[in-house]
Length: 119
Image (cartoon, rainbow, N blue to C red; front, top):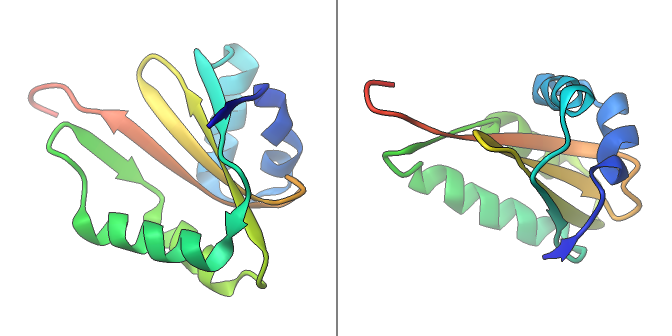
């Protein structure tokens, strides 16, 4: 994954109706992520299959992922094309933002939280 500026995904997030996109935008107004990276563009169909498998496998005991149903539905409904996955890492959470190749449309967002004991 290549390092990027978090601002690269902001216009796509603003146009998104995904509630996790709004959550991430609010977070970005308060602080910059510790790290921001992006994959190369790859086929939407490959992204759908990969994240279907990840959703079916489930989370590790210490991680909770939110957003799979919306992401999988959006990837399934999206026209053929390529997807870029952007990882924005904060101290307590990682957001994965899925956009089209031009980074104009947000296809979905996953939020991964590390759980503490008793959560």
